[in-house]
Length: 109
Image 1 (cartoon, one colour):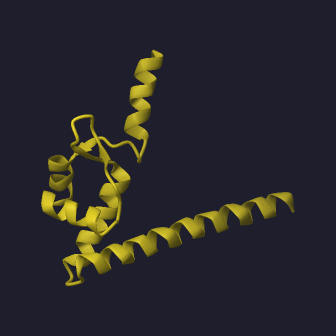
Image 2: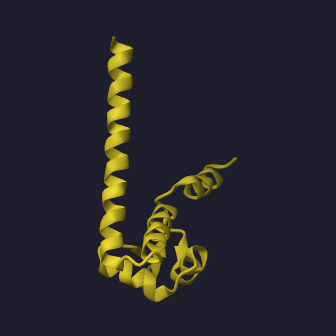
């Protein structure tokens, strides 16, 4: 595999690589482009912009958007759903940091 092929493959494995256009992203999560714009306004995430100014979304951002949609579909306002998802994401990150610290502590013994 050439270095260019490897770099291209790495992008597909990167959860943060902005691979999806707004239309494709909306289709993937079963929402509208307006819904994705509302998530940006609620500061859930800030999609990367292409050279032409078009929004591009990563798989990580789409997972967050899908979770917000799930909560909003149950009747929660979008802004509140975004806050819930942000807090859930922060909790997961803190738990992962704690898990790694515990593993290090046990290994150092």
